[in-house]
Length: 219
Image (cartoon, rainbow, N blue to C red; front, side, top):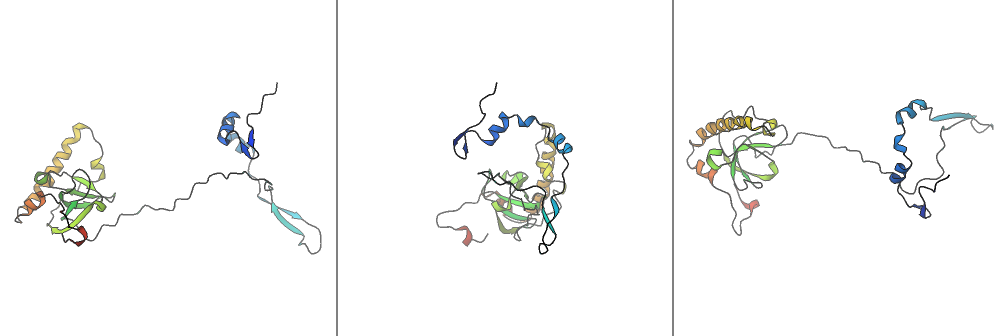
């Protein structure tokens, strides 16, 4: 017994059910696409035919498959080609190892930190140091920092710290972070103590009062 049509038209050209819904009703997903492709190899795309007439060139190249006479009312969506390439983030000229930065966002916004180095991800590796203002080793985006004119002679620190250092680890590996933080703090504090008031400067929180504009200030 013949069943009723699986789809119908509300108006000419407007189907009641979408193409994806009709696809499921016909169970087209059960077909083996690989077997169909293997059974029907791709043939030539064009055919050369002989034509009559002395002025027609004798031959003519035509498509092997004739284009359909009618086209669907809605075009199938085609994803746009992504032409973006992954490059290395360019570090601002005002940010160099040892530069004191002001954090503008995040949990420690307003804090002053010391810039250590740029990681392979393009993020900045900074620290308070932790013993001075409570800011641990962190990664920050350079778009959310203000570089100051204050700079310290940075010793060789954090050479083994990379982006993998900040991935989530088990509790038994937290000792590695504590040891790394202590090593960095001890080396930086030895340099900070040589400059008067530098420790107090790093511990002070940056704030703005009424009438102050950042772009007119020199840090």
